[in-house]
Image (cartoon, rainbow, N blue to C red):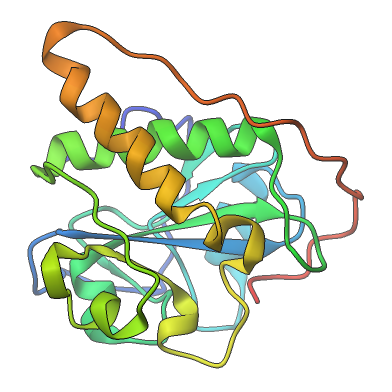
Length: 201
């Protein structure tokens, strides 16, 4: 099982379960409450006393870091069943509602999710605004969020409200991959306060 070649920084944390016990068929996008780089996020997971981690960290500058190998389960979603089947991605965000992410982070997230789907044979991303659809993978739903499993705001309203858009854009890229067609979304940059990192919500 390979990792994404898009990652430019790797620091593997001890906070993981090796190996995962389920094939990868799900994506779970989280927000970090802090405008971090991928290096800052991976370094945090490698040194924190908290039992938390993610497979990937997407930084405010569009950097991508690997914290837990894809073959292993991260400790990210407050739910072992979800984390065993999902690739978990922490995205740098503002420190208050709606926890907006930068345009560079959003673009990198789209690239990373597309790459994960291609390499793991996920042919289509399916999002539902119905929690029961998500947690029970009904109707092919394979996008989950942290708030499904814990009393948290994660991934924040900014990313949560864009999950349908994320799925549509990734699916467009997957469908066009064989023909070489592509294209990217270009969300408007967000003005983000440079608050000190506070850790995942």
